[in-house]
Length: 168
Image 1 (cartoon, rainbow, N blue to C red):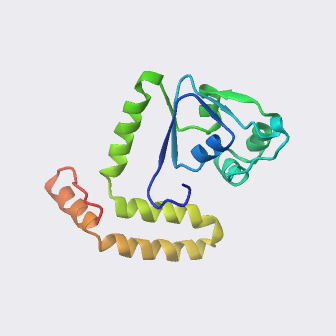
Image 2 (image 1 turned 30 degrees about the vertical axis):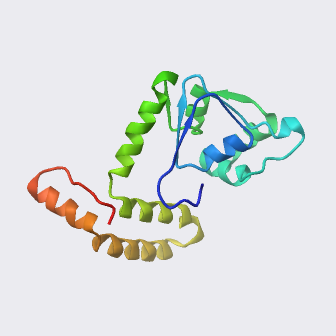
Image 3 (image 1 turned 120 degrees about the vertical axis):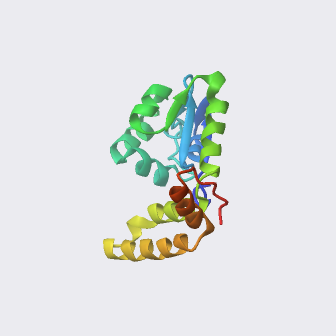
């Protein structure tokens, strides 16, 4: 899930526990129902987190918060998860799917060539120096500049209309 090249969204309605939590952490965005709860329950069961949780969680919420969450097995309700950066947005449970669909459509109708490059660049940035990152950004910019999406964005700006991207 984390390696998927396009943006991903998890809709969390209920409890996200153990590997289910880790799968949600692997997504780019997590929308939660206002009644959702989150538990890193591994340690309560005498195990250390697996399924990528020890890699994903510190990157998402910071090392200290990840340690606290994992070491204590605390339950975080949706507002606490939002405050700590574990979830992106909270919605009433009966409107969660609709909110997720609106956001997913927004992402899907965007310049997906640029989104893929942005995701790859952000996720690999820590492996490079600033100079190396700038070189990778230049390559991505050249590829984006040759895309139909970039041409459409310019035409739309000149015509003062919203662009209609095709993902090419």
